[in-house]
Image (cartoon, rainbow, N blue to C red; front, side):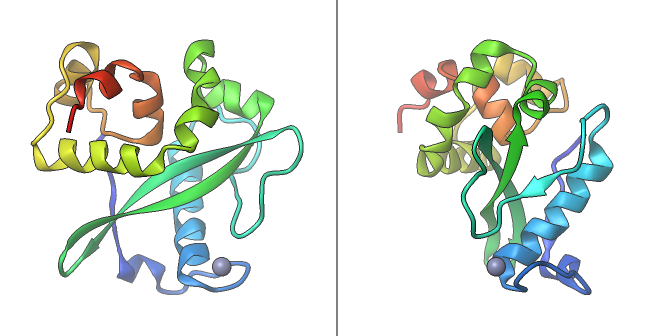
Length: 155
Ligand SMILES: [Zn+2]
């Protein structure tokens, strides 16, 4: 499945906790995730302006938004309980990397944008997943293919 590109029109009629742009985008993205996911236990919970509750993990998602000047990445944070994180990311080694990568948003955005513009083409399993497997550089993709992607991306 190709990555969904959101536009500001997607925000029409959206209601969120505080109504700011970030929360409205979070609400739209939560609806998108809910429609997309199969076998995910419980509801999608975005963080808005609060920190994660004890015992949960803050997971960033990159949301591509089309603007007149091009495509911008917006970060939306989701809070996952342990069993939700396991359902979403079954590989234990990738799961262990989530907090580390969540602290490296600027580098992840640079890698994502380089893949989008074609200036970075990952090799191996990551490259195959992008070209043939219908994957796109979501946070889950980045965390699954780390640290290989990080080593290959030298700029
Ligand atoms: Zn807000």
